[in-house]
Image (cartoon, rainbow, N blue to C red):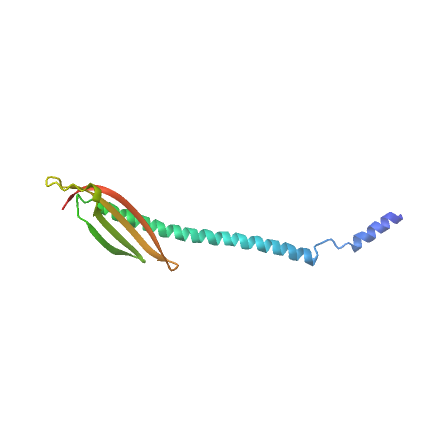
Length: 140
């Protein structure tokens, strides 16, 4: 055996090929940071889904209440409210449009402003969804 081969074999025996403790800790820290970021994204997504569900529930009930009012052939000015359960409340306001009221004795048609609002509490704050429309109807 020549001198080069002996040195090469010696280096192979003494070479501890592997990761040092520092390299392992750095890799672990990078992996931990990436994992925390992914978990925060999931947490934010779940919160967004929860908020979206609350608004969907509010929108559904506001539209339902509006359809109930629009089904009437005759309307009167009203201001009423009620509870839906689960902390949701609805408010309805029906008022004649002041600029278009026809006070002639032969006319019974009136343009009404209809406003439906659904409110609920979330994280100590009041959330609201409101829809408005107008309808020409007879007075009762």
